[in-house]
Amino acid sequence: MAEQNIDKPGRQRAIAARKAAREAAQGVGVKSKAKNVKGKNSNKPGQPAANKAGNNQVNPVTRAKKPAPKIQRDKFALKLNTSRPKAHLLEQLRKYEPWGHRIDFSNGVSTMDVGHRTPFSENPTQKAHLAFSNIPTGDLRGKRILDIGCNSGYSSIYAATQFGMRPTGIDVNPRHIEVSTMLSNMADIKAEFKLGDAETYVESEQFDVVFHFGTLYHLPNPLLSLASTYENLVPGGWVAVETQIYEGADKNQCYFMHMHNNDHTNFWALSRHVMQNYMEFIGFQNFKEILRVTPKAMEVDGMHRTISIAQKAPN
Ligand SMILES: C[S@@+](CC[C@H](N)C(=O)[O-])C[C@H]1O[C@@H](n2cnc3c(N)ncnc32)[C@H](O)[C@@H]1O
Image (cartoon, rainbow, N blue to C red; front, top):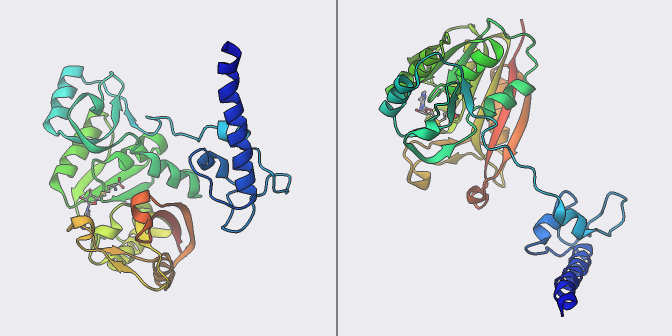
């Protein structure tokens, strides 16, 4: 009896595995477990799945066991050294509740401990990390970075703590400027945060790097902002742009997304083609998309989130 109890699920697993292999070989989308089964060798409809060896047999059991890669929960939290007493720090953090991003201080205090909102990002420095991993800039120590739509200043502060850069963060929301300044003071970091408009802010040829994260699609005039960004960069400087893009049947078609999801701050999802071509028109070169993700909710609309980098022409 005991043996039967052990054997039954085993047999069922073997039957399910054989069925999944059969279906995968026939090019049928396999449900539930097959999610894992499809993996890298995912096949187009009507096309059999191929394994590494190039034949059409898959081993669904082995694949199913492979865990999906996961980011460690707080790997890209902003981590700050501070000499301020815990009580003082907590008092400051409480002033600016609710928090949207995870920031951990060396004395054990974290924005996790105070009021926070949903969605709450545990990994606010991830975009900056990815951009710095892809921009071939050499030594950045002492160089200037402009962080457009800086929010709570995490990308700027990360650029200062990790690369010794001199950040300037701009945002239209005074609350964000106050918070960014408070955080950089707490960690004794030299950074400048000020009110400024992404479309028109210009300090001509002053910045080696510009981060333009999560702000372009909030602008009524995104092309103007890309032109101002070009003006802000030193010759040979790099921009990293993270934005929402639209891919319809016509590559020249952009999407006016004002009030999309009932959000009055949404304006344009440019198509990748239009964004790249316009950037090249104003003088950018070496355009490269370094990340594209399509959250489930965006699939139906042809929307994607991308991060792209490009370089201002050197003199
Ligand atoms: C979605 S958040 C992105 C924040 C951050 N850059 C990031 O990627 O995590 C957009 C930010 O852009 C700011 N913003 C919106 N319109 C702006 C404008 N015209 N000029 C500067 N900042 C703006 C908002 O206040 C907000 O902080």
